[in-house]
Amino acid sequence: MSTLAQSRFSTLDLAPIRDDGNAAQALHNSLALAQHVERLGFERFWVAEHHNMDGIASAATAVLLGYLAAGTSRIRLGSGGVMLPNHAPLVIAEQFGTLATLYPGRIELGLGRAPGADQFTAQALRRDRIGSADDFPADVEELQRYLGPRTPDQRVIAMPGTGTNVPIWLLGSSLFSAQLAGEKGLPYAFASHFAPRYMHEAIRVYRNHFTPSAVLEKPYVMLGVPLIAADTDEQADYLATSAYQRILALIRGQSLVQKPPVPSMQGLWLPHEKEAVSSFLGLAMIGGPEKISARLQVLLEQTGADELLFTCDLYDVADRLHAFELVAQLH
Image (tube, rainbow, N blue to C red):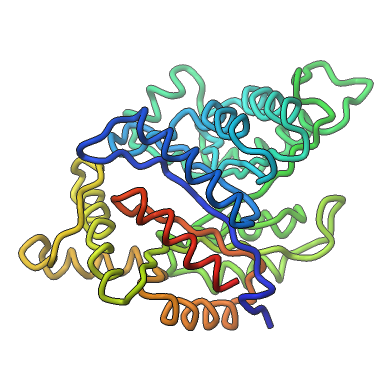
């Protein structure tokens, strides 16, 4: 049985842009958070690829990782994730191969199967390249070849990239990537921070299909967990309203810039919208240290997860840093 003391803690950051801020501020805040959780002993710090969203500054994921790597010294850095249908595998191999060459032993590559964008954005990203989620298994294999040792008959190489063996994770919010990760013997991260519905089934599928590989002897599961921690339950409930407003805006197709917390969400959402936001954040850890500790322990007992990947989009930077301090003290 996994316990809080045994589990590894990591961070997923979306480089959120505040309603009174800008992208530069968001990127600097991302570095400050990476440095902070590095000091707290967290395992890894991932950033996610999102496009055409005015409240998220991590679109150029590999570029941002280079900035974060230059400003940190130990923590592992990676993508959570790169949406592979948007890119030619060779380009990703070159980008992450370059990062791994500059920062050996610290770079990893989490891959998603969904394009993560609307059809107009996907078309703008790919132009003449025909990308599809159906190509994901073949694209992962191609990427592994570019990052693995060069073979005598290999006509196309990634330089830098070849021979770097950048660790690859598969990410998912459904069952497809869970099965593929198991069959390929790769570590698996489930996106329970926004899609907790299939969490237990995905973990089961992954473990049932797991085949040991050169990179992993036994299954390794990481779960995305929304974190809204504060000194008291009441303060956490108040801070959580920023997250509620952001998910509500996502559901409505509105601006995703962060809004400050409000005393109450009453009048801001309709009953069915409240239900949708609650479902989205079904795994959210909201409360003071005691409440969060109890809920995390239940989560670990139910899932046997090896690692927890916390995402914390609180409006005030100081509140975000403090939330990670509180959860680190539970470790």
